[in-house]
Image (tube, rainbow, N blue to C red):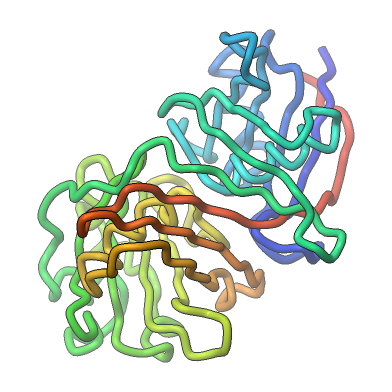
Length: 294
């Protein structure tokens, strides 16, 4: 059996930047075991398998695999797959059936001829437990204890379909110096966590935060852009900054320290001091297409 596949770079409009994604089409005949093997073969942060939608009103059902596990939801696969399906005739309103439920994605132009997709998070960020202490975090990230935290931002666990440990650091230099120390890593992410999302204040015009995401337990030593973490990130931001009621548009730069610069666009609605909606947006550019033998 041969299936068509596409690769895209996501959360960028420049080829060879952003987060690479593989999308395997018409994958209904594949077993879970075959999908895992194909994901390992591509060896990207995530590989998407497109299947027939269970609800005829939806665009498609997708399954998402890292090189070592299946994800119920992930952001750059959602963005990249929606843009691809739109280009293949799916229209501007894409609904993807994922493990967290249907995800609505709008696809349009960014005004400069580049496709831009934005999805509404199916689940709002929720606090999901107590973070490890600063010493454990600093050791796991190769930092000093004094590097952990800034202003009222403290390490915390939030989940918007996938749990992440959010780690604020005091400077851009500390973010750049972060590195996975595997000897101190076990248990850092939490029992159900995918990775540690490390962030600092923005230091360039148009960027509110810089971030990195380390997920070695998920087979991703570092991710160039992490939409599932971005969907939960407003929980950490609101906990540390207390956003005022209304809409907040934020830009997060990721991937800079690994040579794959990415921009993740966040839109957060706050009502009665609580998060009422989160939207995550970004671009994607086509890179490869071909056939894979299964």
